[in-house]
Image (cartoon, rainbow, N blue to C red; front, side):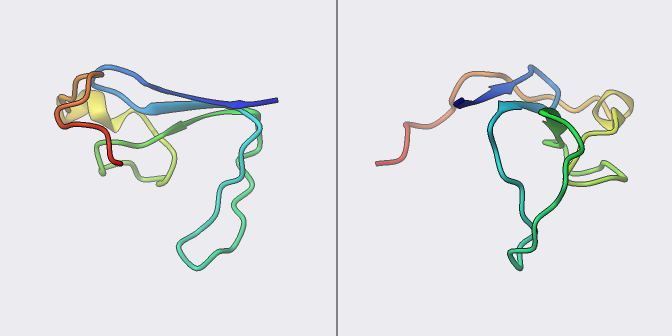
Length: 71
């Protein structure tokens, strides 16, 4: 199975499929499910997961790239 990551406009990154989530030190994080929402606004109380705070702070981010793709 592959992994799909979808940036929701003004919201989280939705991750579906076969993925592994780790802390900065490399420790595994058990997401508890096969589909997760990762915070993009930086204000979630349950980082790295989204808790919906982006709506309260009126976070704005499109879904298109603002810069060229990395090489």
